[in-house]
Length: 308
Ligand SMILES: C[S@@+](CC[C@H](N)C(=O)[O-])C[C@H]1O[C@@H](n2cnc3c(N)ncnc32)[C@H](O)[C@@H]1O
Image 1 (cartoon, rainbow, N blue to C red):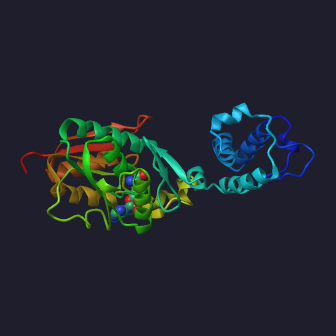
Image 2 (image 1 turned 90 degrees about the vertical axis):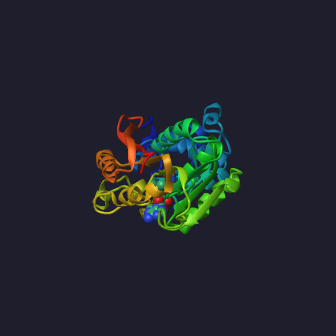
Image 3 (image 1 turned 30 degrees about the vertical axis):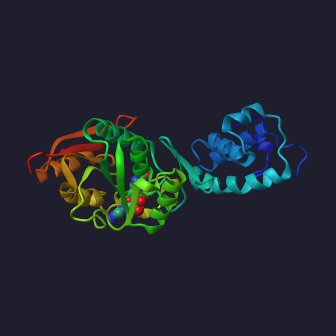
């Protein structure tokens, strides 16, 4: 806590009071306030919220430390701070999340896209750059905000991407994101469970998914931001967390062209079981694992055999 913060009010401040709420004083107070509520990087989140209210970039706050906040600004800021204190994710409060080259609209209908999924995209795009032609077709299972599907079209050689989700609400968000990014023409959003909305005659160069993979019993160990705010359908996958991954491995083979890539994000400790599932099908070669930025095995990649 910064010096003197113990003199300040214990709830989000109002304009009343003898000392002016400058940008710096507010950043310090509200950072400590959020951290007291269990928010890990409270100061950083307070800065994002304050910058949003003031219509500034976060770092611009550092050039305006002495700027006094007027009553209207305090009135806009206070409810945002209260929401974050209740552990609502910062991205839902701001209504957007950065993902690779995209600025995506997000709210409680969709999972907030994660950095490890950006690595899954690195792998898929690198593979596609070498092995897929200029008219590559992709299939994104459980598209959520559309983060993966949109990135394939924006950054890769993909002429079309089919994106499925069992949540109509999620598809509404994904469609809006596609429109905002000017990518709608190449995207085909379909409602239904994983492969259900895909025709039997359709084959793809790439099948990719970041499916739900949390074991139901692990819910208590999740941070409140995740457990209480992100959609359960996006998180939980049965007693062992592998229900969705099993369904995807079981259905992917016929949907991939020979030599096509299956790229899956998996939870901690799931890479081994998923590799075994893939090997058991006899449909894949070159089954391999990739790690996230902290060195944990989080991606399983494999190629459909050329022969069966
Ligand atoms: C972990 S989220 C991933 C969202 C997005 N692809 C991303 O990486 O940020 C999983 C998504 O799968 C969807 N989902 C869950 N079960 C599904 C099913 N059986 N069929 C299709 N989508 C499903 C959820 O609605 C959610 O949008």
